[in-house]
Length: 307
Image (cartoon, rainbow, N blue to C red):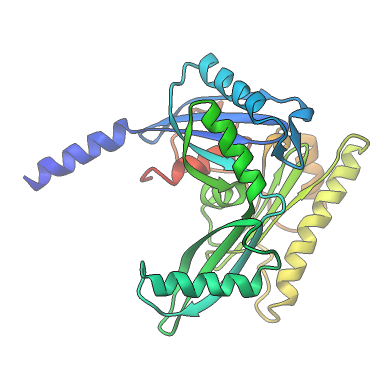
């Protein structure tokens, strides 16, 4: 009987379908995964006027673009895992008393700590949190605050497209899952934003999303700007941990839409001491899938699939 139940579960897992969508102010990226296999992926460029500071200026226009992307690729889905920009979002790792998981006391303790450490009122942010480490005397919790207008406009566009987000999270969290390393530097590059993520001891120690303009920048200028952004993040982490600095062998992963430029990636790497590594997804991916460009989608799908 137990073997029969295991076989049924394996069949259900192998046939399970997950659809993911990454929303940027310049593009949409769509991916379908069946079981652990990536079966479809596609992207669509967006007009810059559709967004302001990564917030959809006209959710209905965005909803039309989402519907067209789904329809043109033959994907019918009402529930989708969605990754959104982390611009103006805040993240902190805090310590809270060791209280029973799932209880209201633990939730209250985390939210009280959020009020202490986040400089913006919770009226302006949607807060989410998760316990990322357990110790005998306390828990370590990751708190993330995302601007309400960014979330509300995105959800409005999705619902107008007939979609209910199963999961809605900032792209940095999906990137951490896609890379799947206890120690890593991640540089996610899009035409309008960059994410710099530092993972150490298996925890997201730093998450930074910033806006940038590449219109009048040469390739060398862009590489210098991005290398400095990463070095500043690593330097801040190292200065706060004398004697336990980031290992020089920490792998660097460069992802996002602009990672398709081999020249840009090479120019960034030439300015940094960290070894560059290619993303090796946990999912089964066709060899021609540009995994680094779809890293957010891969991370969003990996959250729902046992791989």
